[in-house]
Length: 83
Image 1 (cartoon, rainbow, N blue to C red):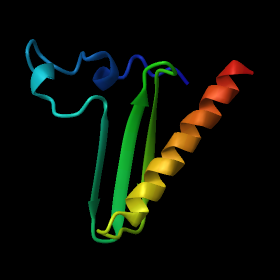
Image 2 (cartoon, one colour):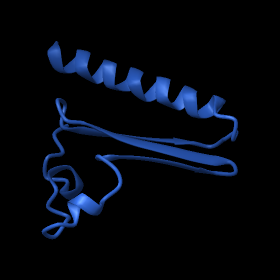
Image 3 (cartoon, rainbow, N blue to C red):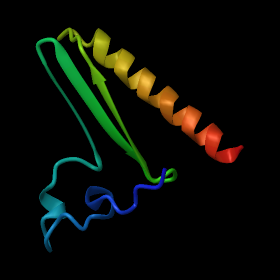
Image 4 (cartoon, helix red, strand yellow):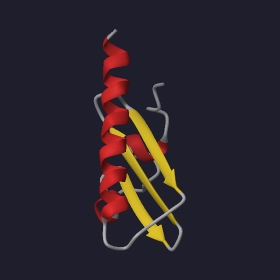
């Protein structure tokens, strides 16, 4: 499951000085009507989890559920790595 070769994780996608301009710290989320996504990197696991959801509400309820779900996924991955 190691993704250290992934250029965004190790910073090799950037030229000198570009990393400081990148607004995200190895994670990103976004939404439009009917669709949202969330991508997060866990340094300890050296793993990226990307979550795609085919619904949105702009009041934040679905977004909060997305955060809860991705955190549970990382918890499962940490447990699996320690077994």
